[in-house]
Image 1 (cartoon, rainbow, N blue to C red):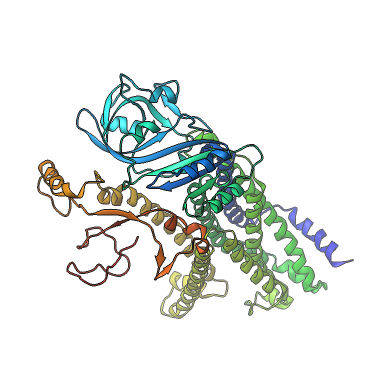
Image 2: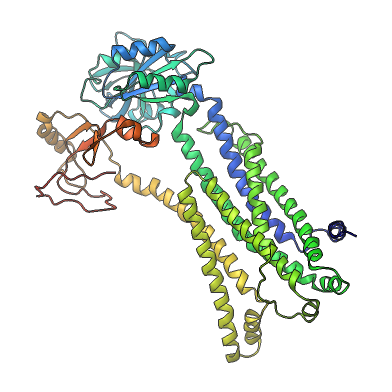
Length: 610
């Protein structure tokens, strides 16, 4: 009879006894696959959610943004030819309630076409036009609840915003393009564009931005049109976005979150892989008498390998299937629990690609950790099996090569699917080094136990003898327990660092109040006013510095060629950057490289960059 059909018949007979002896194998494999599948499926649900609402998130099909200037007539003429347009401008100002309470706000002026896609959600007004309409000659404003609560405002109350007097026309609870505009350091206030234009806050020298959003005709390619506009206006230095990448910041966050959660799953899969290897070794050790009988009856080593390889493959598929079911169901459960409270749109359903990736991770991990015990069982002679002789050196054969290739494939897949391959490679290298050190520690512990057993007696001597013996668990338990503890410590430390950053570091370092655009000839008067309100001004409570904006036009004496700059770094050259001067190093400066200059330094100008 051919070897392969016989191996399948014998494997099927063995599998009839169930999964006894392979419960740890199944649990370790299923847990790692489930974690990777859940991370990938959840991230894909958010990506698809962003893609399904990309037009609403961006506020149109195309968006062009500029800093600290207005669009030229030529630029506006170009935009108006493309489709329906809506223009918006933003500026910052201090808002003040009648009670005297103040707060920095982000003012946004919009025209009558806003929004081109989606809808503004309001409380207290039927639509945006009603909310922004004049009331007794005072312009209306839609105000975020955070600002209304801070200033104790109600609908119909008046408040100051820079030089303007506004009246609260509605509570601003949502903007369709809010996600694409990213994080705001202050509450948002919506006003009419003509009101903001007439306030003087958009005058040259201020920190302002302007954006035009365009609704294209159906079937037009927004990315191609965006590139064509940039080519026709090479000196405009505009930032262009399209609906194909409406929220790049959110997408990067999702990618990083998937990688972090996936790495936890991969680490648990590697740590559990030692459990897989231990389960296979224990099963094969229990099967030694049967293997010896088969070899004594003439069974070749290849049949022994195929017989047990088929069993392990079937059980690995079962473990992977369990992990895929659990991981695929995780985002569906999340969608039911979270409902509409998620800040990012998501489409929770079954996605084949993340599940296929998780299955591939599981298959490679199972192969990497299961083939080596098979190699030992294949080459061990029947006499050694009957006498329970110590295992010899691991042979170099098909199983060993397969295990090595599977391990390399596991690492390569982790690096290839990571958003930052270099970071992934460093992490994989760290896991490999840690595994090697922990394995060496386990062997050292077994060696030390062997040396120490002669110095003890009774139960202690028996325990040390077991630790030093050829079947000691110290050699495998140390890497498994060590990697498991390292994984838990990594998760806890990252969580603690994030919580500390939000609850401790940010409140201590973030200013309670910010004033901008203080005229230079009134700086001393401003200092005196601040001192009359705050008391004596100290380094811990008050910091004023000159402030201008500018653009990077050369690096190391060479002019910048915009075409040679990577897209991910174009923002640094397309937008104005903030420049200031300061002699003495401020507290909490956070210098991580180099050192601050001397207060009396009279040499060439020096820079401190974030």
